[in-house]
Length: 227
Image (cartoon, rainbow, N blue to C red; front, side, top):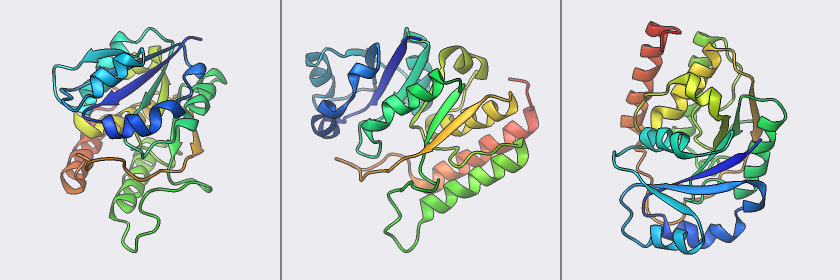
């Protein structure tokens, strides 16, 4: 099966300079970037490294996922953000899980042996919210996932298209997980170590993203499999 690494970027030059040489490009057949209006040299850096850069016209992570799936030529899509949170060593694991028979694979921050970037904090607001949303998804849609929200994942391209994901922003991953549960996809997870962010601040603000995730959950309960 042909494997595509889809690098999601928006002003990620610091992360790219730190991580690019660690990317196991030998494990994939193509690497491409979906870039939204980077102005810090991100696009130029990637082009110099031989990575095809696709300009994203419409804002949002959801749009980046959909555009990446549209333009990638691989049977397996691996989504990666070079912000320091995601361990490049997991790329072959994600692709390998699909090759082994999974429809979707997720690097989980909440399984035994994993670590999320709030583990050293007293109040783990983001981690607690993620666990709560995962629990709700498992209850409503009879799933068994540990981390429904992490965007560090791989999926068969044909299965991605079956999900018809239309969520915007950072809720795209949650919607994908829920719809995969609904359709009975084989979902593989393995523990990952989430690193600290390299450069800048995350644009996924906790409270607004949480309300959006709740909206996605409620809408998915209402629509069932009509998507």
